[in-house]
Length: 531
Image (cartoon, rainbow, N blue to C red; front, side, top):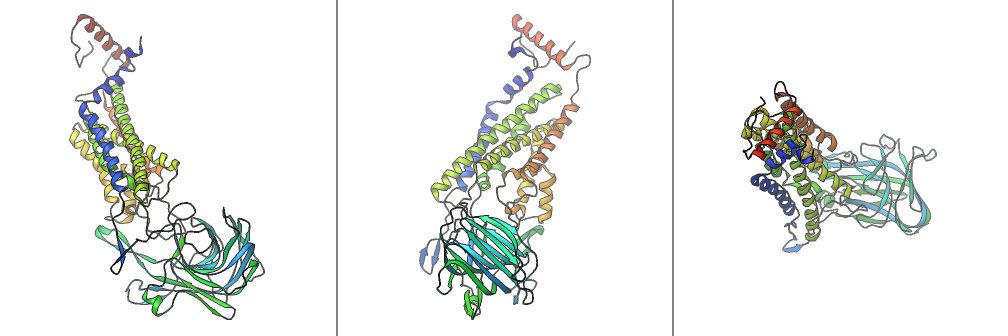
């Protein structure tokens, strides 16, 4: 028997042919075009304009770090030039700061440090924002940390600095290797870690620094959602016993402000950022941050997928319309599900792939800032969205088979997959409610689109509407597929099998009758019952 007449393949071929009507083909094509259109809109050049007085000026942009992404690099920096290998050692005796107008009353400036305020010793490739660095620091509430090149963080000892409990810090450079050590007394040293700064030039700047990010609190908004409020803060680190080794310039300490600083009333009227020297004691005061997340911000890959919810709505309607009236054999139901899932998979893969290629290309041409993404991440997003679309189509088809009403099934599936995602993508619901929706409903599969990184050394509001999902991409996709497989299994179990004949024997009998009618010239009936 030829493959064309194989009864095991006949339902799949028939369902494939029946599915691809002109209307459904156009609808699937429209879903892909909607995704590409969303990417084109997302990649349009920004329309914001900036000015100083009546003079238009370029809008600020985040400095670009060693990984090619926008970073934050604002600090007060007291430094000297180091040629080749060498080290810096300093004793931190005081670490203080201020927070402007914190809750509950927001009516006064108070003394205190935010959790990720930082001061310590640093080796940096010049004073250009975004340059390579390694810093050993004391933080406001997280103890000692060794950080380098914005995204990397190594935890040291816990505790705070007081006049009775100072902290000694040391950085040692040997080529491209920088080692951080800490000590409670200047005699017993503990290595925090060693980091490799690829391409670090022979000439670097070595010194002391201080910085302090904004104080963040959450304010309740509509329906219990939370929005972030940020207030200005400032930190000061006081050092003595500052010692350098190696070919360090003998000049006095240079004081520079890396990045914008000094524009607030507090800085102008009370305490200016920079360096103060009193004998052998150096105090560095600054605000800002050194970290992997830019202050201005840049688009991420998922922003190119703003057309995905509309595309899924179209595919869900198409999948629900594929339901046939009456009861169908189990093999035919499986074949119909395979065809519908394949259509969703192909539409998702092509639509997402085209969106990524077109969107990234247009963003580059238009100068729209975008976070760099590896090709492996792009491939994961494309494949993940394809799998999400396939599962969404299966859910819609199964709902239509179970409910017997295509319109109601499409509406229910759209709510379960798309609408629940949309209400979590907006600042409407309490954060934890939104997170649970994205853990236990079919909308969990949207986690495949996330490319943002949640850095532990950055204080951030990691809510769903900020682009952070509670489940990793593979777990969220698994939740959606559990719904798809479970609903499909319910449909298959409900399908009756004709008494007295197995599914395969029934198919053989129908095929034989079809052959006889073809030779006899009789029209083939759509529904035959076995005698």
